[in-house]
Length: 429
Image 1 (spheres, rainbow, N blue to C red):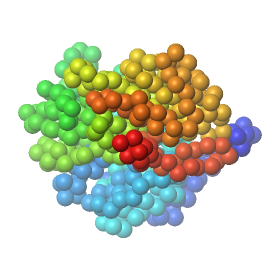
Image 2: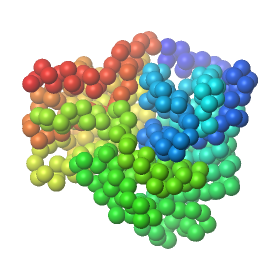
Image 3: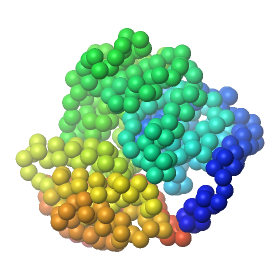
Image 4: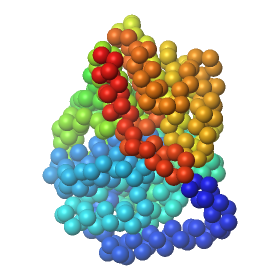
């Protein structure tokens, strides 16, 4: 399947492929009556944190009594009713996304919060959606081979900000923030976890919100915005940035910090994002991290917890998802595991039509001699659990809550890292 797609892309001119995607987007919007015209649509883009930020924004809007729909790589949610996203696609195709927006309108929703990807933008899935607000979380290399370079990847993200003319919300802590600040909007909200400094430029030109007194605990996070203290039951300092993005959306819609606080304190995280699968006899964490930046943030967070206890080790299971894509990052992922983890098992993830052992070998090369290579992901998880002792942390990355493993010839194998870890842990006990 992947080989056929690749062949067709080489044969068919790029302008013809682009025209096809554009016309399909128009057809979808027309078929469902241009539903976004009756909604306030908020688009969230970036490399990391999109799904969590979409969840946070939805919670804040709902806490304010506003009927909301949201769409992310994890789930579809309309006015409190949700279903799992099993498409193995963060941003659905043009017909599916327009149908979702129509369903939101029919259910009386006033807002729609959408996770927007560069691949989706490249295929015009964002076209004929009236975006009110664009949110930028962060940017690091991903899908580089698909886009033909980092600059083209960043340019694809930029299209969301050109489409949203009313409100732009931007993470000043990211080195690409100035790039996204150049686009015109009626209002600009910015956020940062750093103290104000000259590197932020003329931050008086837009509304900026700082997270102060940031603290991390084994049970969660704490920070303040304009003297309002927030407590989150989530792991990872990076979630402070995700929360700040959502708070800025709330403030842009006239929602008070008090309401934002109330909403976020109820948040328990989303499936497969720093999800605690077990606490005893050792901790098991499942996370979606599949880029070097994401993986290092996860490892740093968990290594920091072990350092506070002055005991325990990290036992890591990883691979490299997306056979045929972003091959550059495979040894980098392995190197990071080598830096932070005491025990490393490199395994299969989503090889598609590529030789899975070749992918595994490339990741393992980065970890030097520290890793074990186990093709069967179930066996790899089982091996990690056997290597762990009380006080250790087993961290399984790359798939999160994804329900499938994608292998050769377009075949999808039902999968769930969390379920498998729980099943194997019972056998060990």
